[in-house]
Length: 426
Image (cartoon, rainbow, N blue to C red):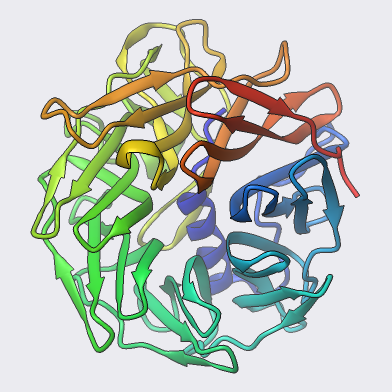
């Protein structure tokens, strides 16, 4: 049960490019489909007692959002500009004040960017400065209420990175990073008003992806070299300063067939990928995760040529070494550490939550693998995490249940996890 936020977002963009009528952003429904599928893609926290999580109600093809007051989660109305809608990321700069971004289909059946402001208990739809149709925003970060940067991709002419800036009143399009090949930005972190780090992936000649990183200095983007990884993609990034960022995602070996992702959904040997920016360069951080299946089958995926592919959700059972993915990371914990979350497939073929803390010191990588808690008897995935204080992190995801897939949340206090219940729908 692997859920890759960037791949889902890319699917939405690909569908936008070719759709003549609204199309679901998820795998097509079947007679056996559960009655409810609720997914959370992102979470942001303005304090230890306030978080907002966003995602999608796959069943109704609309956005989905929940708000936390430090004790209880409650479902709130989600932005509803069109159907289908997907909310991919959220950033909160004050209690009750958050920006979310994503994609939706307009009345003409064309996919376009989505941005909305949650303020005083209601959403206000904004108008991103998209260069054209077939665009999506996949990540957002705010250094202040009047300084937010959103990133994603456009398919208006070719699959290219997209960046926009919000000044508290309107959006403006930023010059996009030019990696020299088709690509997309999946996440961004802005520790200061004029400094942002964005990550994602670029297409290789064989149709697979390589990691992408770009630095914004307030005026222009600079594409940064990343360590050689056979094939892979950054999904998230977090920075506690301009001299320290951690990016997470997944990679898979060069020995995997080039057609694995784009044809049948099998990703042999999918591995956790973590890298650190030290102010001058990126370096790999080793991460040893639990044993998992040799073939990971994604529920949905894409190749960067723009072809949306529906996948089978099955796994083989031959256990191998360190495999999995980490689609969410947050830095700024006690002693300058970071917490990353995700999932893996165990030797029995079951989806398991995965997390790790990084101490920022050890030359060997410094990761300590954790096993988050989740509802008993279920397969589960964590998709994102936010740390409003050095001793509190809130992670969100979804788990399989008898009536479908339901959201859940975990709180990490630096030594143990605590499971939070969430409403099972509106």
